[in-house]
Image (cartoon, rainbow, N blue to C red; front, side, top):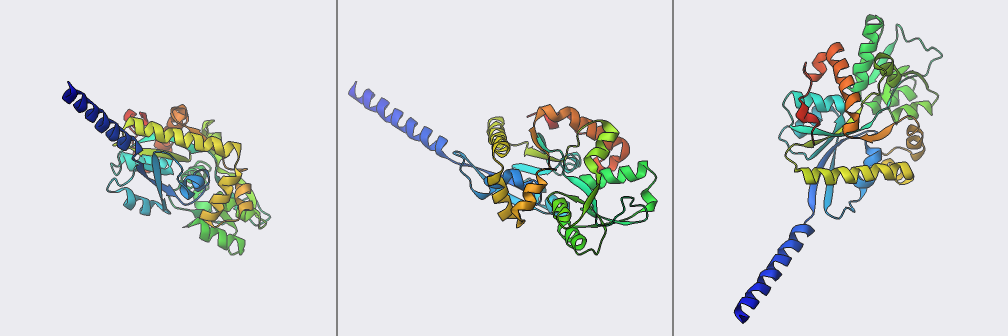
Amino acid sequence: MKKLFKSTILFLILLLLFTINTFSQTQEINVLIPFGPSIIPFAPLMSSNDQADIKFNFVIWRNIDELAIKVKDGNFDVLISPFVTLVNLQNKGIIKARHLATFNWASFYLVTNKNKRDFTGEAIYIAQKGSTQDIIFSIYLQERNLKDKVSIYYSTPQEITTLFIAKKINYALLPEPYVSMCLSEGGTIILDIQKVYRDFNKAYLPITSIGVNEKLKKDLVMRIDRIFRDNFKKLYDNPEPFVEKASSIMKIDKNIINLSLKRLSFRYQGNSAKKDLMTFLNFILEKSPQVIDNKLPNEEFFKI
């Protein structure tokens, strides 16, 4: 009897030690995030990891080519990118991911430093070829027979903003917070890309989304989702810490980031966004199908 008792106690101790060790292990999650407004809502998580059981390793990417290289071998757990890019990478078979949430619904504006709102015959500089703003603006020009009446040039938002402020270029299509930088130096908004899209579809423009690697287990995905949702709630309640940390990461003045929040629209939506997402995808499939490899994602893409 004593031998059996000792064996039982030993078994319970070993089980307890195993359980403690299992639940105390920190799960590392690799997150790819674009340099730009997406950093603002994630800045506190990027600056310090105070989650009990998950450590987020954020890796910044700056253009689509760089992103394609980073995701090629499936070396990511969470991918933050333009929604259209997420779908395109998925449709091409470059990644195997599922849509977790879409959180940015406004960011793009055409600004000028001239006393002229009509840009016919002008040179327009667009941040990032193939970006959501580039796609919607291209459709806008096509629908209004303006495609051959403007000259389009591409560069990084940083370079375009620098040239705009120096008055070396007069028209720039940019995301926030670069729009606010231009406005603070005398620029004026003459076209709201979100409104352009709403005029086409009576729907909100899905800009930035979160995809999760399909290899992640559902319980882990749900934990990540809860952390992200809580993070966005904190942003709504008190944006100052987010602005402070984003300013440090992006090397952009806090006042500019605060101004940009007036035109950005951060709303964290999971399955509730699907109607707007499908409206957008069907619109792109009709007007510019090559952008999403001429097809819609399968239903599994939206199942978490």
